[in-house]
Amino acid sequence: MIKWTLIGLWLAAITYVYFRGRVRANFFRTVVDHSAALAPVNAFMYLTSAVPAKPYIPAADMPAGLKRLDDNWEIIRDEARALAEAQRIKAAESNNDAGFNSFFKTGWKRFYLKWYDAQHPSAAELCPNTVRLLHEIPEVKAAMFAVLPHGAKLNAHRDPFAGSLRYHLGLDTPNDDRCFIEVDGERYSWRDGQSVVFDETFIHWAENTSGETRTILFCDVERPLKYGWASRFNQWFSRTFMTAASSPNDSGDQTGWVNKIFHVSWVLGQYRRRFKRWNPALYQITRVLVIIAVLALIIFI
Image (cartoon, rainbow, N blue to C red; front, side):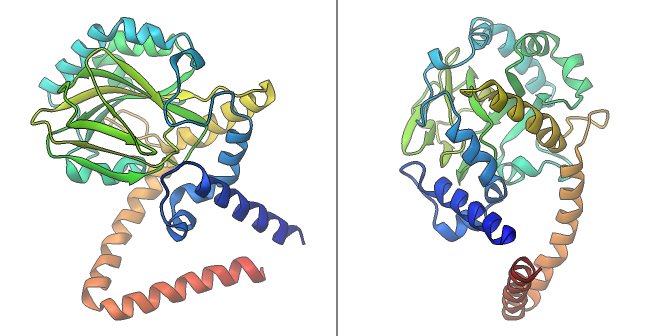
């Protein structure tokens, strides 16, 4: 009885996530998507959220400390420029960035400045002013410089964890409406020195056809919740599980256990892809049998 109750609650949470927002993926994709595993946690975050359930969040509903980033955008931009000139903003080199692995295929690049409780000595060494500003704002849990080159497109997706909201600050942008992000059907174009906050658990996608490269400061900011006990749970969960998804800039930075496992799964995935190319029909039969076996384990154990 307890097992079926938990399965029912999990499916109810996935359904709640599916119907949230105007833009939706198909339901099967929602069930098998990586965010499905966190659906019960995310439903809790939505139900206790102190900000409106809208794609874009007004600045007045966010921590006041974010204005310090807005006010110092030129200092932050200069450190991003120096990194870009040194070619230090780049894709993961060892397939050890599970959260953003698919983004690298179209040229998206990043340099981590902060990732929950993980250590990135490279950031403190190369971007001391930006790192200092970020550590003075405790609500900022993660941050990076993110580059979207001309011709790049990030496909529609939702991020897996609702305990944070996404902050973007334009640094070097095309200042052009052909370079944009669309969140739950509402479009925003980046501008130098201007920031925006949105809920990254709505379906969103981005594209740059402006002819120029876009560089922004990209932050995860703790979602404001109605109750102190809910916020404490969010902080514990973030510290425990999101830190595990840390990815390095350099060899001296911390790699979380999630990305260590992801690297192994990527290697195994090469064999899976070879199997698929060798015999597509047998591959599909095997895939269906594996799914059936997993469902049987859930139902009968």
